[in-house]
Amino acid sequence: KDQSSNYQMTVVTDIEGHYEVPNFPMPSHANLSAHKNDDILNGVSTRDIVFLQQYLLGKRTFDQSYLHIAADIDNNKRLSVSDIVALRKTLLGATKDFPNGQKSWRFIPDNFDLDSAVNIYDFPEEMSIDLLEEEWEAEDFVGIKIGDLDQSINLKDDITIRSSDVWSWHLNANGTGMDFIAGEQGTLQGCQLCFDIIHTGNLKVHSKLNGWNTNHWSLNDDQLCISCNDGKKCGSFYS
Image (cartoon, rainbow, N blue to C red; front, top):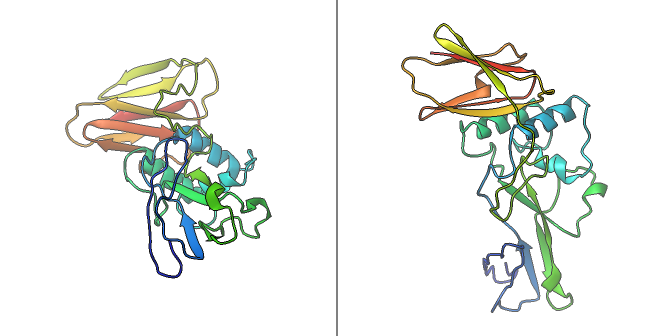
């Protein structure tokens, strides 16, 4: 954006994030910013909810300052249980967007020292360039994928295997419903499941997990999706 004439130009980067600005008028100053707000679930899973819960409980630290920004799902410049609720709703398809205008990606100028910031959530999202003095071809941004706390983002559309572990599940019929319980091969910190179901009437999903509520599951077009992040018995569903 040209500061003097308010002229704006948009260009699209390649898959590696490289960009060129052709035929841009040459004022003395310009502002440069980056934007991406699609593919909201790329890199996001129940594992990220587990990481965030562990952080809130003091059982995990974030080794990068950028992860604090990635964890601010509800865009209120602090981390709390409400971020877990917002992330789970998005995972389950209950909402297509993060709340409070939070974008799928945030971009910070590469030369901004986030570690030295007084408030880590007060960061610039554009840079001012003096075109008469600076070599501005190498101006870069750091992209932060909101919600991706385990840094599993897939940028090249390749199939990524999150884990080579195979889990067994026990399905126990119980009257008009069914329990599903994880096997005994390890400690289950969280799970994310979807079932294609045919049902009539009201569907109820409950669990013995502490804090279980309707935010842990969603029914969309005969697909039941469940996200939980504690305990071995994930839930039961009844029609």
